[in-house]
Length: 406
Image (cartoon, rainbow, N blue to C red; front, top):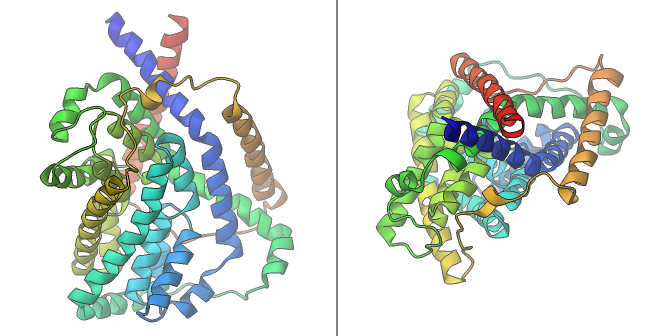
Protein backbone atom coordinates (compact mmCIF):
# COMPACT_ATOMS: atom_id res chain seq x y z
CA UNK A 1 0.00 0.00 0.00
CA UNK A 2 2.78 2.43 0.90
CA UNK A 3 4.47 1.70 -2.41
CA UNK A 4 1.26 2.52 -4.30
CA UNK A 5 0.86 5.80 -2.42
CA UNK A 6 4.48 6.72 -3.16
CA UNK A 7 3.92 5.98 -6.85
CA UNK A 8 0.70 8.02 -6.81
CA UNK A 9 2.60 11.01 -5.46
CA UNK A 10 5.37 10.55 -8.01
CA UNK A 11 2.86 10.25 -10.88
CA UNK A 12 1.09 13.48 -9.86
CA UNK A 13 4.43 15.28 -9.50
CA UNK A 14 5.50 14.05 -12.95
CA UNK A 15 2.24 15.18 -14.58
CA UNK A 16 2.49 18.67 -13.10
CA UNK A 17 6.17 18.82 -13.96
CA UNK A 18 5.40 18.00 -17.59
CA UNK A 19 2.84 20.79 -17.74
CA UNK A 20 5.21 23.24 -16.03
CA UNK A 21 7.75 22.49 -18.77
CA UNK A 22 5.22 23.31 -21.48
CA UNK A 23 3.03 26.05 -19.96
CA UNK A 24 4.78 29.04 -21.55
CA UNK A 25 4.72 27.26 -24.92
CA UNK A 26 0.96 26.76 -24.73
CA UNK A 27 0.42 30.44 -23.95
CA UNK A 28 2.76 31.58 -26.72
CA UNK A 29 1.23 29.21 -29.26
CA UNK A 30 -2.39 30.09 -28.53
CA UNK A 31 -1.57 33.81 -28.39
CA UNK A 32 -0.06 33.64 -31.89
CA UNK A 33 -2.93 31.47 -33.12
CA UNK A 34 -5.53 33.87 -31.71
CA UNK A 35 -3.95 36.91 -33.37
CA UNK A 36 -3.78 35.16 -36.73
CA UNK A 37 -7.39 34.02 -36.57
CA UNK A 38 -8.66 37.52 -35.78
CA UNK A 39 -6.48 39.52 -38.17
CA UNK A 40 -6.62 37.12 -41.14
CA UNK A 41 -10.07 36.10 -42.44
CA UNK A 42 -11.41 33.24 -44.58
CA UNK A 43 -12.59 35.44 -47.46
CA UNK A 44 -9.22 35.64 -49.20
CA UNK A 45 -8.59 31.95 -48.60
CA UNK A 46 -11.81 31.02 -50.39
CA UNK A 47 -10.89 33.15 -53.41
CA UNK A 48 -7.48 31.53 -53.99
CA UNK A 49 -8.22 27.89 -53.11
CA UNK A 50 -10.83 27.15 -55.76
CA UNK A 51 -8.97 24.79 -58.11
CA UNK A 52 -6.93 21.59 -57.96
CA UNK A 53 -3.62 23.16 -58.99
CA UNK A 54 -0.38 22.99 -57.05
CA UNK A 55 -0.74 26.67 -56.21
CA UNK A 56 -4.13 26.04 -54.60
CA UNK A 57 -2.72 23.17 -52.53
CA UNK A 58 0.28 25.30 -51.55
CA UNK A 59 -1.99 28.13 -50.42
CA UNK A 60 -4.20 25.70 -48.50
CA UNK A 61 -1.07 24.44 -46.76
CA UNK A 62 0.09 27.97 -45.95
CA UNK A 63 -3.29 29.05 -44.56
CA UNK A 64 -3.38 25.87 -42.47
CA UNK A 65 0.10 26.64 -41.15
CA UNK A 66 -1.07 30.01 -39.81
CA UNK A 67 -4.30 28.60 -38.40
CA UNK A 68 -5.33 26.91 -35.14
CA UNK A 69 -3.98 23.52 -34.10
CA UNK A 70 -7.31 22.44 -32.61
CA UNK A 71 -8.77 19.59 -34.65
CA UNK A 72 -12.36 20.74 -34.13
CA UNK A 73 -11.57 24.27 -35.25
CA UNK A 74 -9.66 22.93 -38.27
CA UNK A 75 -12.55 20.65 -39.24
CA UNK A 76 -15.04 23.52 -39.13
CA UNK A 77 -12.80 25.89 -41.10
CA UNK A 78 -11.91 23.33 -43.78
CA UNK A 79 -15.62 22.51 -44.16
CA UNK A 80 -16.45 26.19 -44.51
CA UNK A 81 -13.71 26.71 -47.11
CA UNK A 82 -14.87 23.68 -49.12
CA UNK A 83 -18.52 24.74 -48.90
CA UNK A 84 -17.74 28.23 -50.19
CA UNK A 85 -15.68 27.24 -53.21
CA UNK A 86 -12.29 25.84 -52.20
CA UNK A 87 -11.34 22.61 -53.96
CA UNK A 88 -11.50 19.33 -52.03
CA UNK A 89 -7.74 18.75 -52.27
CA UNK A 90 -6.88 22.26 -51.04
CA UNK A 91 -9.36 21.84 -48.17
CA UNK A 92 -7.64 18.58 -47.17
CA UNK A 93 -4.28 20.37 -47.43
CA UNK A 94 -5.59 23.08 -45.09
CA UNK A 95 -6.92 20.47 -42.64
CA UNK A 96 -3.63 18.56 -42.49
CA UNK A 97 -1.49 21.69 -42.26
CA UNK A 98 -3.60 23.22 -39.50
CA UNK A 99 -3.17 20.12 -37.33
CA UNK A 100 0.45 19.24 -38.17
CA UNK A 101 2.35 22.34 -39.32
CA UNK A 102 1.23 24.89 -36.74
CA UNK A 103 3.73 26.80 -34.62
CA UNK A 104 2.41 25.87 -31.17
CA UNK A 105 2.64 22.13 -31.85
CA UNK A 106 6.25 22.50 -32.97
CA UNK A 107 7.14 24.36 -29.77
CA UNK A 108 5.62 21.65 -27.55
CA UNK A 109 7.35 18.88 -29.53
CA UNK A 110 10.71 20.65 -29.22
CA UNK A 111 10.36 20.72 -25.42
CA UNK A 112 9.45 17.06 -24.99
CA UNK A 113 11.07 15.30 -27.94
CA UNK A 114 13.74 17.52 -29.45
CA UNK A 115 14.46 19.21 -32.75
CA UNK A 116 14.57 15.97 -34.76
CA UNK A 117 10.91 15.34 -34.02
CA UNK A 118 10.04 18.97 -34.84
CA UNK A 119 11.75 18.51 -38.20
CA UNK A 120 9.91 15.22 -38.64
CA UNK A 121 6.60 16.87 -37.76
CA UNK A 122 6.98 19.61 -40.36
CA UNK A 123 8.44 17.43 -43.12
CA UNK A 124 5.83 14.80 -42.27
CA UNK A 125 3.02 17.35 -42.45
CA UNK A 126 4.10 18.25 -45.98
CA UNK A 127 4.41 14.56 -46.94
CA UNK A 128 0.92 13.88 -45.57
CA UNK A 129 -0.45 16.57 -47.86
CA UNK A 130 1.51 15.31 -50.89
CA UNK A 131 0.45 11.68 -50.36
CA UNK A 132 -3.19 12.74 -49.91
CA UNK A 133 -3.02 14.86 -53.07
CA UNK A 134 -1.49 11.94 -54.97
CA UNK A 135 -4.17 9.50 -53.76
CA UNK A 136 -6.94 11.93 -54.71
CA UNK A 137 -5.47 12.29 -58.22
CA UNK A 138 -5.19 8.49 -58.57
CA UNK A 139 -8.60 7.57 -57.13
CA UNK A 140 -10.51 10.51 -58.66
CA UNK A 141 -13.43 10.57 -56.17
CA UNK A 142 -15.42 13.06 -58.30
CA UNK A 143 -18.86 11.67 -57.39
CA UNK A 144 -18.06 11.66 -53.66
CA UNK A 145 -16.82 15.26 -53.86
CA UNK A 146 -19.90 16.38 -55.79
CA UNK A 147 -22.29 14.69 -53.33
CA UNK A 148 -20.41 16.11 -50.35
CA UNK A 149 -20.59 19.65 -51.75
CA UNK A 150 -24.30 19.23 -52.51
CA UNK A 151 -24.92 18.08 -48.93
CA UNK A 152 -23.09 21.12 -47.56
CA UNK A 153 -24.93 23.52 -49.85
CA UNK A 154 -28.23 22.40 -48.30
CA UNK A 155 -27.15 23.97 -44.99
CA UNK A 156 -27.16 27.75 -44.38
CA UNK A 157 -23.91 29.67 -44.83
CA UNK A 158 -22.53 32.17 -42.40
CA UNK A 159 -23.03 35.84 -43.20
CA UNK A 160 -20.09 37.80 -44.50
CA UNK A 161 -19.21 41.00 -42.74
CA UNK A 162 -17.51 44.03 -44.22
CA UNK A 163 -13.76 43.63 -44.29
CA UNK A 164 -11.34 46.24 -42.96
CA UNK A 165 -7.73 46.74 -43.94
CA UNK A 166 -5.06 44.96 -41.92
CA UNK A 167 -3.75 48.29 -40.56
CA UNK A 168 -7.22 49.25 -39.33
CA UNK A 169 -7.64 45.84 -37.69
CA UNK A 170 -4.33 45.89 -35.82
CA UNK A 171 -5.05 49.35 -34.37
CA UNK A 172 -8.56 48.44 -33.25
CA UNK A 173 -9.17 47.91 -29.52
CA UNK A 174 -12.22 45.87 -30.50
CA UNK A 175 -10.07 43.43 -32.45
CA UNK A 176 -7.64 43.05 -29.56
CA UNK A 177 -10.66 42.30 -27.38
CA UNK A 178 -11.55 39.60 -29.91
CA UNK A 179 -7.99 38.28 -29.65
CA UNK A 180 -8.49 37.97 -25.89
CA UNK A 181 -11.80 36.17 -26.38
CA UNK A 182 -10.30 33.89 -29.03
CA UNK A 183 -7.41 33.08 -26.69
CA UNK A 184 -9.89 32.07 -24.00
CA UNK A 185 -11.78 30.03 -26.58
CA UNK A 186 -8.58 28.21 -27.56
CA UNK A 187 -8.05 27.17 -23.93
CA UNK A 188 -11.72 26.25 -23.60
CA UNK A 189 -11.29 23.90 -26.56
CA UNK A 190 -8.23 22.11 -25.19
CA UNK A 191 -8.24 22.29 -21.37
CA UNK A 192 -9.85 18.88 -20.97
CA UNK A 193 -7.52 17.23 -23.49
CA UNK A 194 -4.44 18.82 -21.95
CA UNK A 195 -5.50 17.93 -18.40
CA UNK A 196 -6.25 14.29 -19.24
CA UNK A 197 -3.22 13.97 -21.53
CA UNK A 198 -0.69 15.21 -19.01
CA UNK A 199 -2.29 13.21 -16.20
CA UNK A 200 -2.16 10.02 -18.27
CA UNK A 201 1.47 10.75 -19.16
CA UNK A 202 2.41 10.94 -15.47
CA UNK A 203 0.52 7.74 -14.67
CA UNK A 204 2.11 5.89 -17.59
CA UNK A 205 5.59 7.12 -16.63
CA UNK A 206 5.31 5.72 -13.10
CA UNK A 207 2.87 2.81 -13.16
CA UNK A 208 3.13 1.16 -16.60
CA UNK A 209 6.05 -1.30 -16.92
CA UNK A 210 8.23 -1.52 -20.02
CA UNK A 211 6.88 -5.02 -20.68
CA UNK A 212 3.50 -3.51 -21.60
CA UNK A 213 5.04 -1.45 -24.39
CA UNK A 214 7.14 -4.41 -25.52
CA UNK A 215 3.90 -6.35 -25.95
CA UNK A 216 1.96 -3.54 -27.60
CA UNK A 217 4.80 -2.45 -29.90
CA UNK A 218 6.77 -5.53 -30.95
CA UNK A 219 10.56 -5.60 -30.69
CA UNK A 220 10.85 -2.44 -28.59
CA UNK A 221 13.83 -1.82 -26.40
CA UNK A 222 15.39 1.26 -24.87
CA UNK A 223 18.08 2.64 -27.15
CA UNK A 224 17.14 0.44 -30.09
CA UNK A 225 17.13 2.29 -33.38
CA UNK A 226 17.22 -0.47 -36.01
CA UNK A 227 13.89 -2.09 -36.82
CA UNK A 228 12.75 -4.42 -39.60
CA UNK A 229 10.11 -3.27 -42.10
CA UNK A 230 7.28 -5.35 -40.64
CA UNK A 231 8.13 -4.17 -37.12
CA UNK A 232 7.92 -0.56 -38.29
CA UNK A 233 4.66 -1.32 -40.11
CA UNK A 234 3.19 -2.73 -36.89
CA UNK A 235 4.34 0.35 -34.97
CA UNK A 236 2.74 2.81 -37.41
CA UNK A 237 -0.53 0.86 -37.28
CA UNK A 238 -0.58 0.45 -33.49
CA UNK A 239 0.43 4.11 -32.94
CA UNK A 240 -2.89 5.51 -34.27
CA UNK A 241 -4.80 2.85 -32.28
CA UNK A 242 -3.02 3.97 -29.10
CA UNK A 243 -3.84 7.60 -29.94
CA UNK A 244 -7.48 6.65 -30.46
CA UNK A 245 -7.65 4.99 -27.04
CA UNK A 246 -6.40 8.14 -25.27
CA UNK A 247 -9.31 10.24 -26.68
CA UNK A 248 -7.14 13.38 -26.56
CA UNK A 249 -5.73 15.70 -29.20
CA UNK A 250 -2.18 16.08 -30.41
CA UNK A 251 -1.23 18.87 -27.97
CA UNK A 252 -2.14 16.70 -24.98
CA UNK A 253 -0.57 13.61 -26.52
CA UNK A 254 2.97 14.98 -26.91
CA UNK A 255 4.29 14.06 -23.41
CA UNK A 256 2.86 10.57 -23.90
CA UNK A 257 4.62 10.40 -27.29
CA UNK A 258 7.88 11.27 -25.51
CA UNK A 259 7.29 8.45 -23.06
CA UNK A 260 6.61 5.99 -25.89
CA UNK A 261 9.90 6.92 -27.53
CA UNK A 262 11.69 6.56 -24.20
CA UNK A 263 10.20 3.07 -23.82
CA UNK A 264 11.73 2.02 -27.15
CA UNK A 265 8.94 2.62 -29.67
CA UNK A 266 10.37 3.38 -33.10
CA UNK A 267 10.65 6.88 -34.54
CA UNK A 268 8.05 5.86 -37.15
CA UNK A 269 5.64 4.61 -34.48
CA UNK A 270 5.93 7.79 -32.42
CA UNK A 271 5.43 10.01 -35.49
CA UNK A 272 2.36 7.95 -36.45
CA UNK A 273 1.04 8.43 -32.91
CA UNK A 274 1.47 12.21 -33.19
CA UNK A 275 -0.10 12.36 -36.67
CA UNK A 276 -3.20 10.44 -35.58
CA UNK A 277 -5.50 13.17 -34.30
CA UNK A 278 -7.52 13.16 -37.56
CA UNK A 279 -8.10 9.39 -37.79
CA UNK A 280 -10.08 8.89 -34.58
CA UNK A 281 -13.80 8.24 -34.21
CA UNK A 282 -14.93 11.76 -33.14
CA UNK A 283 -13.40 13.18 -36.34
CA UNK A 284 -14.97 10.36 -38.42
CA UNK A 285 -18.38 11.19 -36.93
CA UNK A 286 -18.02 14.94 -37.56
CA UNK A 287 -16.99 14.41 -41.19
CA UNK A 288 -20.00 12.10 -41.62
CA UNK A 289 -22.25 14.86 -40.30
CA UNK A 290 -20.72 17.34 -42.73
CA UNK A 291 -20.24 15.27 -45.89
CA UNK A 292 -22.04 11.92 -45.41
CA UNK A 293 -20.63 8.57 -44.29
CA UNK A 294 -19.18 7.54 -47.66
CA UNK A 295 -17.03 10.65 -47.90
CA UNK A 296 -16.13 10.43 -44.22
CA UNK A 297 -14.85 6.87 -44.64
CA UNK A 298 -12.97 7.92 -47.77
CA UNK A 299 -11.27 10.74 -45.84
CA UNK A 300 -10.40 8.26 -43.07
CA UNK A 301 -8.82 5.90 -45.62
CA UNK A 302 -7.04 8.80 -47.32
CA UNK A 303 -5.51 10.13 -44.11
CA UNK A 304 -4.65 6.73 -42.62
CA UNK A 305 -2.93 5.54 -45.80
CA UNK A 306 -1.02 8.82 -46.05
CA UNK A 307 -0.07 8.59 -42.37
CA UNK A 308 1.40 5.09 -42.76
CA UNK A 309 3.38 6.03 -45.89
CA UNK A 310 4.62 9.27 -44.32
CA UNK A 311 5.74 7.69 -41.04
CA UNK A 312 7.66 4.90 -42.81
CA UNK A 313 9.30 7.31 -45.26
CA UNK A 314 10.29 9.66 -42.44
CA UNK A 315 11.86 6.83 -40.47
CA UNK A 316 13.95 5.52 -43.37
CA UNK A 317 14.89 9.03 -44.48
CA UNK A 318 16.00 10.12 -41.04
CA UNK A 319 17.82 6.82 -40.54
CA UNK A 320 19.67 7.34 -43.83
CA UNK A 321 20.97 10.73 -42.67
CA UNK A 322 21.58 9.63 -39.08
CA UNK A 323 18.95 11.99 -37.68
CA UNK A 324 16.98 9.58 -35.49
CA UNK A 325 17.73 10.54 -31.87
CA UNK A 326 18.70 7.91 -29.36
CA UNK A 327 15.86 6.76 -27.15
CA UNK A 328 16.63 6.77 -23.43
CA UNK A 329 14.47 5.28 -20.72
CA UNK A 330 15.01 8.22 -18.37
CA UNK A 331 14.45 11.17 -20.70
CA UNK A 332 11.94 13.69 -19.40
CA UNK A 333 10.87 11.58 -16.41
CA UNK A 334 14.07 12.20 -14.44
CA UNK A 335 14.35 15.94 -15.04
CA UNK A 336 14.05 18.33 -12.12
CA UNK A 337 11.01 20.24 -13.33
CA UNK A 338 10.50 22.90 -10.68
CA UNK A 339 13.62 25.01 -10.40
CA UNK A 340 14.68 28.60 -11.03
CA UNK A 341 15.72 28.52 -14.68
CA UNK A 342 14.57 29.92 -18.03
CA UNK A 343 11.32 27.92 -17.82
CA UNK A 344 10.44 29.60 -14.53
CA UNK A 345 10.87 33.12 -15.93
CA UNK A 346 9.16 32.29 -19.23
CA UNK A 347 6.16 30.91 -17.35
CA UNK A 348 5.93 34.07 -15.23
CA UNK A 349 6.12 36.27 -18.35
CA UNK A 350 3.48 34.34 -20.25
CA UNK A 351 1.14 34.14 -17.25
CA UNK A 352 1.29 37.96 -17.30
CA UNK A 353 0.49 37.93 -21.03
CA UNK A 354 -2.50 35.66 -20.30
CA UNK A 355 -3.69 38.21 -17.74
CA UNK A 356 -3.45 41.04 -20.29
CA UNK A 357 -5.38 39.02 -22.88
CA UNK A 358 -8.11 38.17 -20.38
CA UNK A 359 -8.31 41.86 -19.41
CA UNK A 360 -8.78 42.91 -23.04
CA UNK A 361 -11.21 40.12 -23.80
CA UNK A 362 -13.50 40.15 -20.78
CA UNK A 363 -13.14 43.56 -19.13
CA UNK A 364 -12.13 46.18 -21.69
CA UNK A 365 -14.07 44.40 -24.44
CA UNK A 366 -16.88 42.87 -22.41
CA UNK A 367 -19.51 44.14 -24.90
CA UNK A 368 -17.60 42.92 -27.96
CA UNK A 369 -19.19 39.87 -29.58
CA UNK A 370 -16.97 37.20 -31.06
CA UNK A 371 -17.90 33.74 -32.30
CA UNK A 372 -15.88 31.22 -34.27
CA UNK A 373 -17.53 28.20 -35.85
CA UNK A 374 -16.53 24.90 -34.30
CA UNK A 375 -17.15 21.35 -35.44
CA UNK A 376 -20.08 19.76 -33.59
CA UNK A 377 -18.65 17.72 -30.74
CA UNK A 378 -20.43 14.75 -29.22
CA UNK A 379 -22.19 15.98 -26.03
CA UNK A 380 -21.75 12.54 -24.45
CA UNK A 381 -18.04 12.41 -25.26
CA UNK A 382 -17.46 15.97 -24.08
CA UNK A 383 -19.35 15.34 -20.84
CA UNK A 384 -17.35 12.16 -20.27
CA UNK A 385 -14.08 13.95 -20.98
CA UNK A 386 -15.06 16.77 -18.62
CA UNK A 387 -15.65 14.33 -15.76
CA UNK A 388 -12.38 12.54 -16.52
CA UNK A 389 -10.63 15.94 -16.35
CA UNK A 390 -12.26 16.68 -12.98
CA UNK A 391 -11.18 13.27 -11.68
CA UNK A 392 -7.70 14.08 -12.99
CA UNK A 393 -7.59 17.26 -10.90
CA UNK A 394 -8.64 15.30 -7.81
CA UNK A 395 -6.00 12.64 -8.56
CA UNK A 396 -3.29 15.31 -8.97
CA UNK A 397 -4.29 17.19 -5.82
CA UNK A 398 -4.26 14.10 -3.62
CA UNK A 399 -1.01 12.91 -5.24
CA UNK A 400 0.81 16.16 -4.45
CA UNK A 401 -0.42 16.00 -0.84
CA UNK A 402 0.86 12.43 -0.59
CA UNK A 403 4.24 13.39 -2.00
CA UNK A 404 4.95 16.38 0.21
CA UNK A 405 2.98 15.76 3.42
CA UNK A 406 3.36 12.00 3.98
